[in-house]
Length: 346
Image (cartoon, rainbow, N blue to C red; front, side, top):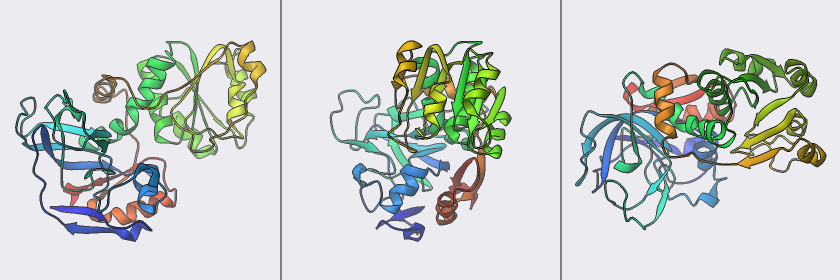
């Protein structure tokens, strides 16, 4: 099969497009013929550059921390999947063979694309219990993006913030993928009233295109004044932030009203942010940090995507052979959507 292989850390050119042996599924595993794998700023690009060494990546490495495609083989003991099933996989998983349901496994674990071969390949083997079946009508490109960002946004808004229909939510980072997912879940699934915020007019407008009721370009507008005007002076019930911009988040925090909830699963723009503690206790605000997602969130996201309530935002789809170009584009910070590598595209 063809795959991207990294043998040393450095610029995009360290990635090589090579022919390597086809992997064989071990007991409890399935093999996926990949049709989509997303390119991620931290887990792929920064990892390849050598700035994520705390994750202890195992070289030589086939990167790619997610994938979606068609199962073409199953290992011993796998009964819930068969060849031809459409499926996706991502994230942390056992490194050694395990039971189909993962029961009793106590061995080493790690993320695909970091500790074990990832999705930047024509074929990848993953544990069956870490594999999700795709609903009918959801294509592979859409599924890969939804799998990467949807469950985090779903968990923060539905489970942690418990956002309700009619409540106001301020979504920071409207131009990013987590922001886009958050806007759509808040509006189309939960029925909330959504204000999208970003640091440029184009990124704020991207929030409107995702369905936000209002959008604020905080580089040109007063964020707090805008939110208060839109909410009739009450402020928002939920502040959804995954950036921790030390200049912007303190202002957004003041936009939280009585009983407000701040939720986050990221801090790449910070991480240290000053907040007004008087506002915190006077308005009885809660702050919750919660990475990851709850069991069942992914299938709920897939269902919402299949129904058209969540739409993935793509910048472009490139063949696997253009992985170096994909990383260069990510480093140049071009586009508002996800870059996808599709090994089946030639």
